Length: 115
Ligand code: 5GP
Ligand code: ZN
Image (spheres, rainbow, N blue to C red):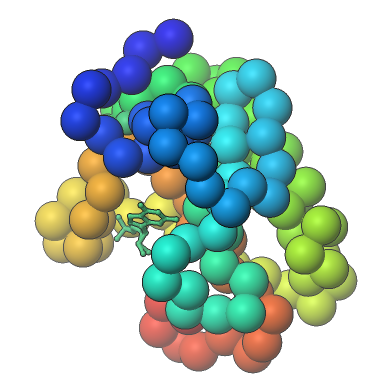
């Protein structure tokens, strides 16, 4: 496992700091965003640290993240109504936390913007 000492998502994904978890397995954790933009707003993050989606993320980790999205959608009851997955990378995307994460948004009709 490779974590960064001062990274909040490394801490949450590895239970150094506890959060509101929706799903977890060996490679990823999913927990509720602290500032939700939709009725369901869950963050899916790998337990190892990667800066963003283009940081040489192993295929196994990407697959685990996609599996977690599926599990979250089912657990939240939005698998049939629909949902959005967003991965911000870098400054122009407004990435605020520099640890790879998927936003899973749903539970109401999403706008043309982020949520
Ligand atoms: P970004 O802009 O990097 O794609 O999104 C970062 C997201 O992480 C934001 O939606 C923000 O509300 C959320 N966030 C930041 N710090 C924490 C935290 O400590 N706990 C939780 N649950 N969410 C956080
Ligand atoms: Zn991290």
